[in-house]
Image (cartoon, rainbow over all chains, first blue to last red):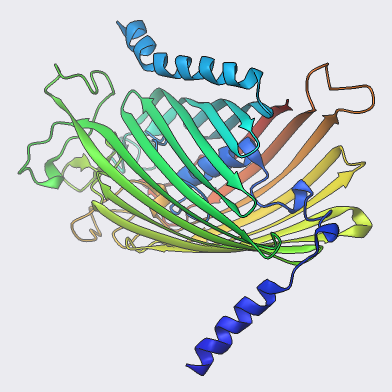
Length: 68
Length: 409
């Protein structure tokens, strides 16, 4: 029980430590934003999901594979 | 007849497109992305080329609402092996390479509602090719907490897919099943020699994005996918010793993955270091690990250069065998090289330039920004336990090149 509470506190407390809005200039740069790769990133994920035996960690909902 | 069918399929999208354009005239903002990706894999008699053009549009009728429409296609040409390990005059020859062509279209649409605390989104896509159709519905929600330093995102997708196959007798033993020779006549009600096999996909994903410092952010992603239905390649057969049969995969697959990614801003180079690790496993026995490292540099805010490397390794499926005639692995058999032990290395680069509206007014008179992007990757794969007869996989190298243009209005 104590370990669970400690683990949850360890996860939750740092999450409350905020970066103030005036400090967010760098975080707003596309280089720091996950998923900002747009179509090029989506196309590559499509290719790799059809060339490897695993998917996940990204969005993939079927739709054929051009693999015949 | 074919033209009428295409018009029938496209008509709703044309209506929606016109409606969206009409809304866009009075919209708060919008974006149009046009791009194309070329994938080419070659080596020996086997090769595969896929050209993927895409057009996507986004309109914000009001600040709180975004409407999206998109179209993608896969134009596929190549040569693949129809009967894996079939005996031939030369034991090391790939004797059954066959030419293939296909065209896959995907139309998609969706909307997103936003507030200061998060967003809700829904989307639908319809994909079709000669031998495969897919309807997919996606729902998602995002919550932004602690002055947007913490973001939780949940999404669910369900897809109803149909695969063309030979009308196999219901009680026929899998080792007697024939492969589909071509897509001619697929999904035609008058062709009783062919049948439609169903696949249902349920995908769940959750992510936690956390800004830990003004220069450091991480993202933890957990995803799971349940696939239920026909998952073999209907065209591919496997040599079993005395004869060949259409490959036979289990009907149920449960896949799950976890990834942890981080981005660190490095002020002296005005750029960001990206790192990502991912672990995956499924109930077919495939386990994989991948690691990725990238460095992106921003020059004068407009020019961006990115270099990237990725390593991937996986184990084979529990029922995979390199030779089912000598070493069968239970009731299932496959000729899919992506179900064998494999590894791959990807290295690449990307360059983009963004023209932004300035004191002279909008770009070209109507755009707030225009971004051009060129991306190129080289992918090398190794399949140490997969052979065509005694020949190693010849087509292990591929290039992926993307050119795109994004206009924000």
